[in-house]
Image 1: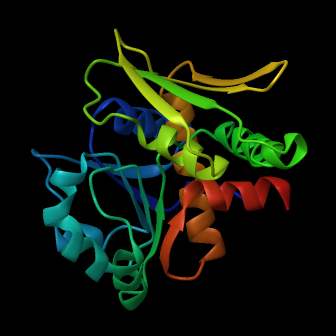
Image 2: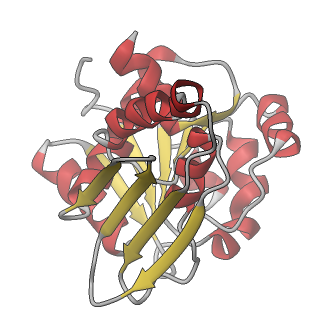
Length: 231
């Protein structure tokens, strides 16, 4: 995929992940601007952008939604706490906005996605229900539990899994899936070591949105990356 560093990217949010997006943009020589309380996002500012990356909490994003959708810009968002349903997707379609939403922007997570899809077939092999347990660990400032990633793992698996959460220290993201088969156990683990992995994935999605101009509407990052990595 070619570099789009000559196009201005907007970054809404200067928290831990948003700051990492800005750092990578700076390192790669991309033209970008960070928006926050001291440099608020406005309709005029949106007109100067080629795309918008969002890493703020969902409740903080809601007041900006009409303005962002009205801009028609492609969006990559890691915001949680908003109902990303058929209604939202239709609103994005009506506004001609390609909205790429993700719970976890690690490209490696999409390899996990593929593996979970394989594990989802295990009841067919054993002919019985397999007890499964998903456990996620994040930093103490993460408010939602279970994490969106853990919920998506359970959706990918398609089984009635037990999901537990833990909040400790400054853990970036640790997810594990344990499946107890009759005479053996399979454990799948993904651990993010720093937030740069999420920032890099978000920029990958932004590049895709700008270069490929996908159909407007809600697009889940993990579905998009899975298709691109394994097509």
